[in-house]
Image (cartoon, rainbow, N blue to C red; front, side, top):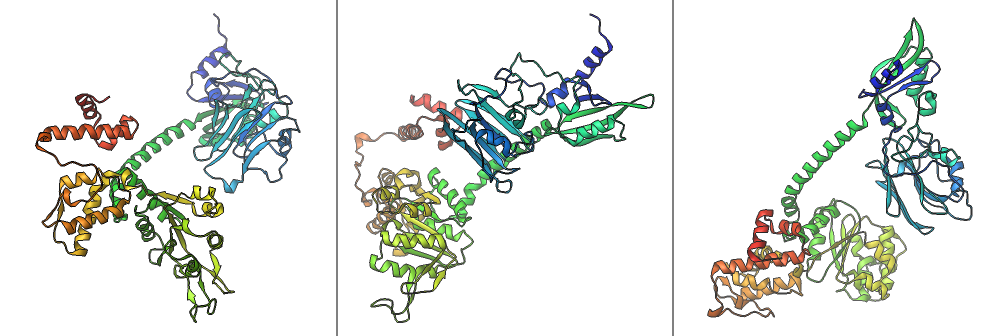
Length: 618
């Protein structure tokens, strides 16, 4: 085989690890090596194939664009009309997810958009459109645009801006085009395709775009670096080495060199290094460091939560999760709704949130809405002016909302409030203002509101006993307090915390709970929760004459038999039975998830599987 000089140049440049482009003094591309084609997406290993074609009337179009008018072929309101979108609120630089039918006015489009200065972490849209499940997500944090059609996903990463598109055949509903990196070079920007430009085929055997002999502006549009490149080829005296430049939305390090022959300018050369790969490596390193920080944080978090919430007793996963939510709630001004059965400690949790908030130096007003007669509750909450009703104080009275001004009001058992009073309460929650009974002056308050109930408010709404709008107003930051029966492992720390307080209050001396009595406590269902545990322990302290509380002092309605001599087994057998039972119960609790079981039991993988084998647990 005989090679000419151009073949050798191509072989040599294709071996380079940097992109290399040469144009003549007319801007015509003479050299464009493989690395440059990879950087700018001209060579792209697409996994999904489609044929060459054009958009046709009736085709379904899905667009995901993080910044309208940037790197999408200057997509504008004119082109969006092709999809039936005529919205004057959509402007340049807006983020847009849109689904529509090309040039079919009878079928309405579906879309969402965000202003540049109001972009959240993500913009999402998911609909069932013309019989197809279609969705789009713009992740502004990780800079990914994803379009979903049925089970298929089409994702594209971006640096600054990107215009993503998928087209479905209007008749067959099958994918006929999807956007991929390098669309600028291929002339397949969103606006180009909507205006009728032909798009190229994709797939393993599709033809690679031949850029040799084309004008540089056909491949790279609108880039200041390419304009400089062209200017140097025409004779301008510009050159630089290893400068950061952005070309077609790709961050690069460029070296620009004029090419002269016999003192005359014949062209220019541009060497390009892709730094998006460097950014990816840096991001992976940063993510690894962040993971390490999170692990260290989690190791410290247990101690931190115990110090921050000393009155919320327990070490179970359920109660640790409650503490984490409470810590987050204490740092916000949002209304908190505490749900849970009676006796679970909702009041303690509400006060703990207040004591860790910015309102901690201000009042904490606890209002038990279920304990105040309905006829008095309104005047207690909002106060009244002098002479407002028969029996009112001459000087009038300040209500609980005024007392809590600057601090927190805790509306306990909010589910017991009547419907008429719920209307007035809703207004206070919305406006943070109200009128005293019999008053004409609006009173403004700056308060944090925490509500609690042992009722199922959703059922109450269905039955018409609780207003739906009030429910959504208070259910901003819900926290569920688990019943004691769902966190039996917290019996031990609760007893250690409660018993000294009882002994101090009633003067019972120094007493301890025997292991047998503790074991009995763990077998009970605890319908009255922690409050019932306090009562049981107080009674046991009064019954126990010595320094030890035995099982006979624990008055519970459980099926428990005193051991007889025939049932006595060795301590080693008892430990094994307990160990086997604990593993089986934990596996059941986590639906057979071995990883979660190992974590909960705090044992290694080797030890765990040894125990499974030892006790024949399947």
